Length: 279
Ligand code: PEP
Ligand code: MN
Image 1 (tube, rainbow, N blue to C red):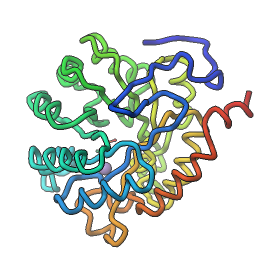
Image 2: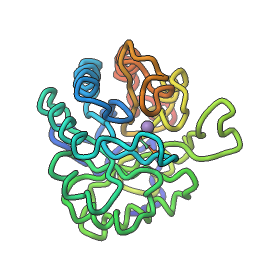
Image 3: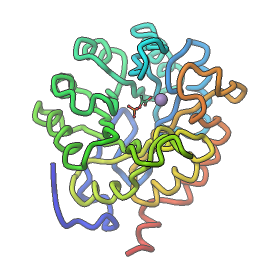
């Protein structure tokens, strides 16, 4: 999984393209995976699924199992949430990316979703990594906020060693001294070209958790693609929903109208074109 000496701006030739339905992650077009942090209800999820599709997103995200810092916070709808996501996929055609927290839930998530998300907190949960490695569906592997690049790539190896090379890496910010100052995490933008030098796996960026602040998300989307990210994972809330009313991560979620604007600008702003000017 590790290679050396491949400058990021030499293109995608050595990147493994992970296909999810009609969507190619790791090809020339940046993918946009968007949706709510958590599946809160059928109405909320279906509304947002249609909204992110209309905005130009290529996959739907939404958590049915939520890894919350406090056990007293909303933990997700579980299987009912997965069924809502499956309905949203049927309604929009968007493949579904959703987090799995527990190895015992892997078969259920595989039955109803298209891509397993392994959250930052579980990046080194080796039994979970092996279980999704055996489940025959692509894995979006988030980097822990204190993991080195090598630790992250070794976590991907736990999936690969079970025979599943369809791993999409996701940088979602690391913990630094600016935590809670103006942002929730610090986006390690350097790691994007570093991944592209050292691994054949595609890499996407999650600007929502990397910043924790909705107004910072659009510029960080552009910076990520400019640095060579193969896509973005973006949290979205309803056009008229108050951020404080979302059950999780409302303040870092952008509106569908903002997402549409970001995606329209990204179409004129491809990694190949930007990287070409660097070379
Ligand atoms: C999420 O994507 O909602 C999430 C919990 O992310 P992370 O694992 O990066 O904190
Ligand atoms: Mn979230």
